[in-house]
Length: 344
Image (cartoon, rainbow, N blue to C red; front, side, top):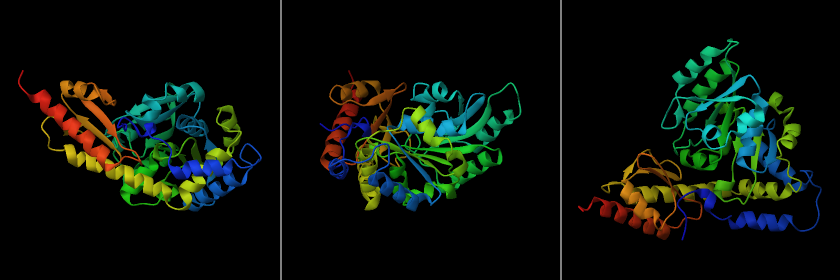
């Protein structure tokens, strides 16, 4: 039975597995001194510019921590949405590894409000407050919503004028680009991004993520901090070869469009059903839904997914989610909602 709990639960796409198998033939120099890493880095430079520095890492938390290590440190603060992954779901890794504070800002539908950012910058110059050094945004947000390019540029402008770097957590950046009809490179320097945590595991790759450093002066310590932060893979070719396949023929877009389309299909199938309410617009591959507690427990008897207080649940689709699986899950959700509404 296919999972609707997280796109982390899906398998790897055939193209990624084929790339790993091909890279496994014979020997190659370790730690990134191999042709797969060189070719994949060149493809990233085609998307994000020749000055982009490309660092393959082991996982998303590692990419985020490495990025924040380049932009912040003790006595400094990373500003982010009040529901940001770097604040809520990384077990304090940024604070523990970087030594910075991670400070939440007010958001609407997961997106940082410009006025909240301006307010937080009021502590600049105060010796009694951690000094903001980085703004971290997620695209898509943790609620599946999207920043437009104009919204990103506005926040980047505020941050840059105050001397902050802008980090973009792009764990699902392919889903965002596909939804907005944009190339991946749109979320680069033109949008004001200095550091980009580029994810592929949630969109069909087996393992490994990437940190793109788009402001050259921030990259000087990155090779050494990648090792110090436990993110330098010895057999790096098995990470980078997947990204060569991912970027070379539109695989990233095909996988993301498929996941997004499945989420839209699921939203259409349950929208309007009494007892099921879409909490946020469905823009990518995530649905946040409110349901009665009884309906949630009934559906969770056979289907695992995440839920929070107030009857809020999250359903996610993946690159390999089929129409029949969507329709079956939607039917179960509608049945659970109807059963909870029957008088006892």
